[in-house]
Length: 374
Ligand SMILES: Cc1cc2nc3c(=O)[nH]c(=O)nc-3n(C[C@H](O)[C@H](O)[C@H](O)COP(=O)(O)OP(=O)(O)OC[C@H]3O[C@@H](n4cnc5c(N)ncnc54)[C@H](O)[C@@H]3O)c2cc1C
Image 1: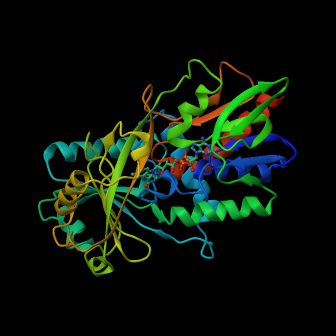
Image 2: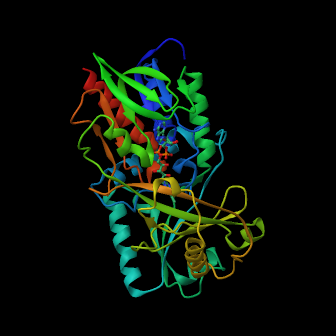
Image 3: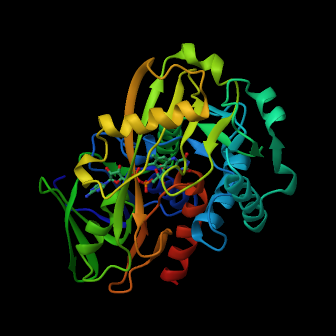
């Protein structure tokens, strides 16, 4: 980069959030934008290290941004992306929340009511009894008493989806720099000056911070007291050989959410292998978010065995881990302009269901940008 270029909008972060925002801006005519990513490719961090479920939207607490953008995001996925000729793999996959105890059955009722409050289609959720569930998947634990079945969830190949969005954004004229780790942001007269760790410089009139677990660090380049505080919550997975696929015929099977078990699933991947995990480990150092550990996988095995006693959890072909980005102050997304400086916007704390929410978050960020620019 010889001449320092000034962009109208610079987006920091090439995960699913930064990419969907970039595409939304380009589609709406904001062409002079640039996306910055520290890695040599986009979609290498949390956005491709997850369960890949487009959630229906029953899980998030009513009234939160997570609930609102999950349901809206799922509708956008259905309308805009989940087509027969989509350029990425996806499938309809019903979700089943499994109850082993009386308390968990009560929890299913609560989740059902929560789903209704969040705006889920009434006919899309149903409490089913043991026998009906075991007909759907005879290999599940025989001790499961009931399950909440949700018929509007899907699974996607998140890595392919993000790269599809990236390709579309490039066709629309996206400027981008890979291997550009933002290391310094300063103000020069009317614009921001952004410097990378290897001294590349560019200017921006407006910055969007979509840097995942690093969002608070980016905020601290320009703010003394960011209004969000990011902690990690790592999740580890086992990927089992395709031979185990016959024991997970259809659907995504979840334990009833609890402090430790929330989100743990056993599900067939789109390539026929079987996914088991994730666990949830708070405050892992940010450099360790992709590490898998003996202890973590031991827990994942235990839960896998509890859900489905038939699959062989020793037939492991791969393991991986990713980290949710949790806003400790609210446990919700933080999507707002900086209250300390102008022309700086944060999209932070995008924990699960961030993948499902991404297209709705992108629409909202564009709407806010237009308002701020009036
Ligand atoms: C275990 C687990 C399971 C999940 N399951 C689901 C699920 O089934 N369904 C669902 O909807 N959601 C799920 N999620 C949540 C979802 O994956 C995230 O909400 C989403 O990926 C967040 O995307 P992002 O773009 O904010 O973050 P990221 O994907 O982390 O992207 C941020 C990007 O910013 C870049 N970056 C950081 N710092 C800098 C810098 N200084 N300079 C330049 N670039 C920088 C990073 O390299 C990265 O590429 C899950 C998450 C986890 C961890």
